[in-house]
View 1 (cartoon, rainbow over the protein chains, first blue to last red):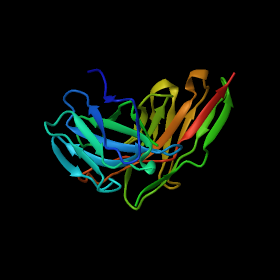
View 2 (view 1 turned 180 degrees about the vertical axis):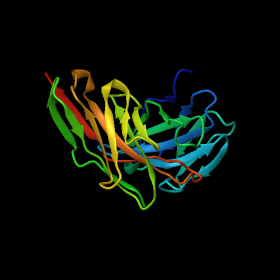
View 3 (view 1 turned 90 degrees about the vertical axis):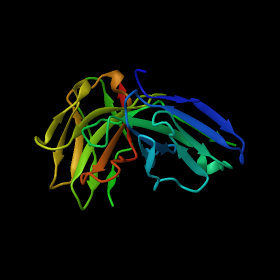
Length: 115
Length: 116
């Protein structure tokens, strides 16, 4: 596609429910990032994939957060037993590769609200 | 550890006036620097970036930024703003050592509010 797409755009979950957020990166982009943006804050890094390999998950806030990219393209961020503090916008970004001259292109985000 | 400070949470400015959005960073190693813009209900869009070379970087939509290593700053400027520039602006750094992850570390953002 023309850009990074994410679905759903909005998700409301009751506390304790599991959610799955999808990211479709730009075709051919090997690097994929997930960021979390709380209200009034800048995005914060969650995890990174190079193709299907998850090379860095140091930003995942707890073991309730899990991300995968099984075929090296589409990625899913799963949050188990959601808590109110998980409410945020989850942003996905993709780039051609790791080098800093490769721009990270961001999707529109998924706004998660946990009641 | 790196961090980014955007001291101004909101900058009101009149249309056609100049504007400067401030960004300071802290890092014990060399960094790459970025400015992203976020329009309502849209993803972040890259305005400009500094990787190396000339310290004055020109970006899209008439924006430019100057890397100042001694002051650890990367302020964003535009000589004449338009209503359509109203958006949230984020400064970000990336550690310049080519490690396993080139993650971006963002500031808290500055809302540029252009008034007619």
